[in-house]
Image (tube, rainbow over all chains, first blue to last red; front, side, top):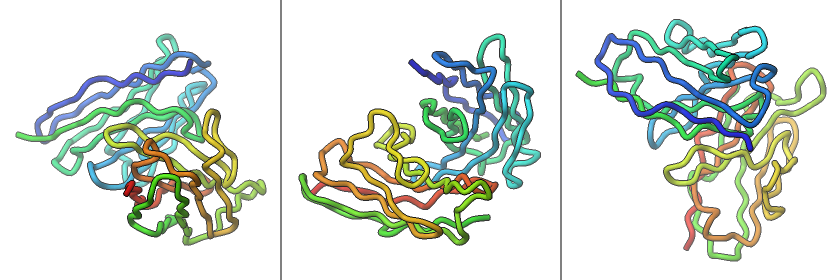
Length: 115
Length: 112
């Protein structure tokens, strides 16, 4: 069955960067898209961007350009998202979800930015 | 960006009852290819969102026929019949027609 397993919670200092992972199984990763989302607890969902694992092509929400960088490793069927120059406003839960229809989601990872 | 407006913000329903959630988009969600990319998701407490409905009215695999989606253009509705305890959570509509992809602010379903 399709599974998306995200890395564990992160506590990072302001100004630092963090790399989140989303390891997949149960489907053909190399010909699929992966999207990433941000959700501040109690608030709605924001789409950060999308990557096509076949060629690494990406598309970003303008709001997150310069903040998020999406990459993939097809050898391990894993998608990554780098978040840079973190501020307290980046504290949130981040999700990965498969494809363009978001039919399967990772469990989410809490990123806390605090000194 | 396409703004998705959901109503109501919250609703309370008795078990076995029926509810409707409205979602309106600020622009038509009909894609150039003729498809309308409007989906519905349920986020249960402490969990990630799960896909219920895609392209307005198509139930995702394993989703009960108690959930139904309808609408066109800019107005869409999710109906839940014979509400069960496991239906509680926050329901989101989301559009995949125009980038950036956007979501409604959510409707919280509580069981009386």
